[in-house]
Length: 446
Image (tube, rainbow, N blue to C red; front, side, top):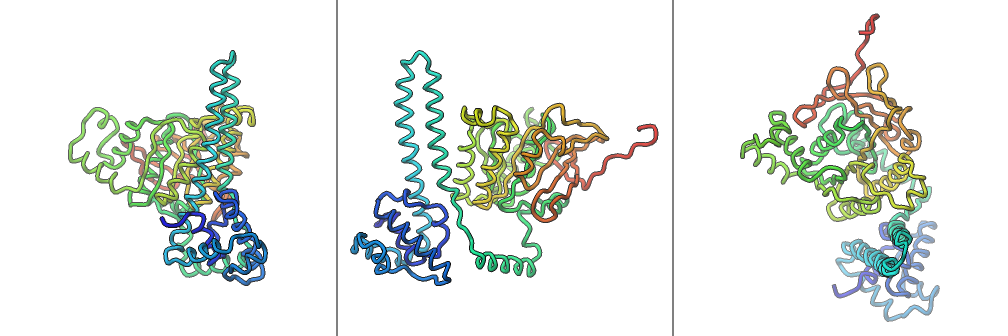
């Protein structure tokens, strides 16, 4: 590149000041040159003033110099020319992302040097745990600083809200199905959820061994095997277990997990499953330990690089808790989960990802028997958790041997509804059966 990232961002902003993407997250501190930061602040102020007066226009050098005469005239001319280059419109977003990434790297580099110094002191200390706490605290500060640099959002004026609302409703009137997200092909699931919708977050809980991971992997293949890009953040299973489950799903009901683990499979079946995986848009992480900061960074990175539209985090209990998070929540699990869910949901909304989170149900307050099915009201920490999700689900085994998914819809479409649908689980593959109702007991309780 013949010109720097900062010059490209500034030049395009002068030419097209109404561009909202870079203004949403860049601040003057992110520029490597001080006067670039001053210029960025001035461009944003002038652009906001023009927009408020409904006079979007190019920001000329003379106008900039009237407000800050110390800015170098020749350099301003160069930046203006860079912003007028044919590829500036296509390249300025990537330049802004590179510039922000460099700044974020610098923050971690500074934290790393501090961590190294603390570690050297700790190695000769009688209580190295003190040094460890300092290291975690310093690194968390850097992580928060880096994460917060991406959370600034633009504020829309009443006029902008009016225009956006009219465009949205007219588009819906012309195409009623436009409200749907990615369809899973499960009729009842799609009907209740209206597909996997951008920026929405689903939260599924179940006791151990009921099939949370299996259910989510089936959902993942239903959504992504047609080519839709997605990310499965695996925090619990080994890569071998995940691969085996995905193979069973893609081979169909004729092959069980036991068949695959025992080697009872033909080369034709292996080739078929491998080909389906190759065509799929589903990316799978390994099961290495991850903090909530690492998970959010993964979601953002794959949203930018791979344009993922769906993601699943499986599951919350496996996320590493920092010492500061422990102090803030007292180690109470549902408080940690609520905090993590808020952060994940923020990333999902920012990048337009339909996101699923898997959790564990809360002990003795969750019964699993007919007539006393698990309820959302009795979920441990239910109110705190449910306030931050769009769709909440409880997965549980029914009396007839099938698996039931109870759904509570908090936002989007028919909010407040509560439905149940059920599945038959065979060989690792889930087949949707339709809506479910509890079996009616006779007068003898049978």
